[in-house]
Image (cartoon, rainbow, N blue to C red; front, side, top):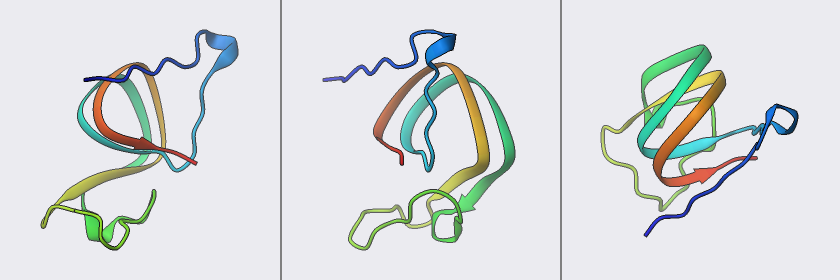
Length: 84
């Protein structure tokens, strides 16, 4: 089963999100990151939504976080995507 979401059909209708969190299995995109931190322990990340009590996080799990990410030509397989 899959769910396809299309957004930002052209340059006049760009999509922007704040506090974007993607639990991604695979991501293909052209990306430019500002102030990126790669390999941050999930418990030590400082950007994006916090792991809520009772949520499953793999012991020793890691993340990446950035002040800003510009993604184009995105194709992703994700477990969850949330944004403010």
